[in-house]
Image (spheres, rainbow, N blue to C red):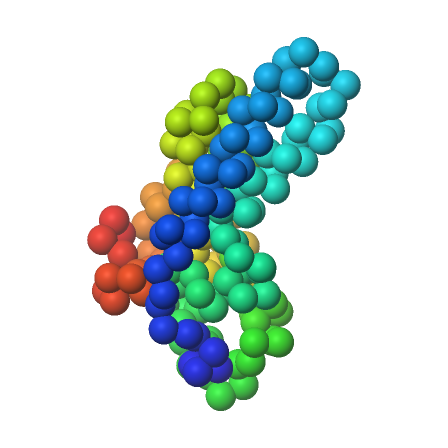
Length: 167
């Protein structure tokens, strides 16, 4: 599996393009939703999809796990296991949204400018964690990285090749 954990390749330029695309859609959808409340369900879907799109960046099969920047040490240990394969990752790992999608969607729903939507979407960051860590994070107090700190989950930053500096 360790071989599947591809060398970190920054997707910053692609993420910026994806973020700008979704920010533009969100601002127009917010305008339309204020004038036509009957599109509520589609508007909610759009906000939800945006929070996923900026963390997946490219098709999920490629980046949902193995090209992510942040990994918990437990998830990295799993990846080094001889039993770990790309096909078994979905049963053992989770693509965890550091800032919960619910909070991001609330903030996105009030964005009136593309710059405001980009600012919110820039907070959409994923971390690959184990299934157990995900369960615990879902129940942890706090917001963002503070949930990881409270649970003593150590996170490796593959870009810096070091322990995440905020933890």
